[in-house]
Image 1 (cartoon, one colour):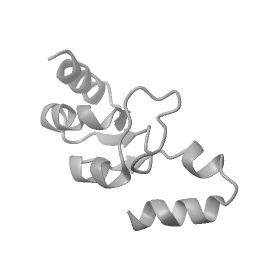
Image 2 (cartoon, helix red, strand yellow; image 1 turned 180 degrees about the vertical axis):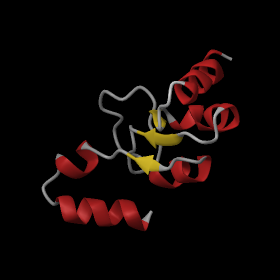
Image 3 (cartoon, rainbow, N blue to C red; image 1 turned 90 degrees about the vertical axis):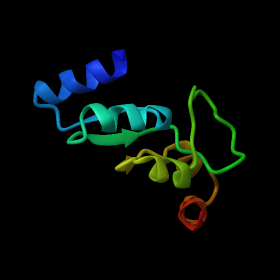
Length: 91
């Protein structure tokens, strides 16, 4: 309920979106469907979580209702970022 309350508050304050974990998408969509949902912690299946507490694959995040995915180290901290990005897009 706290998550829903904060989502409604963000929408009422004029925020265009929120940053949230994949696990929070359903509650946020139900409470404030007009908000854009930005999800960090996106990792390929089987990749290390690094310092992210809650991670998801791109497929899982999009299926759960993410509007924007934030993908950092799985692409930026590898020898071939283009290949890593292509692999993420391929699923």
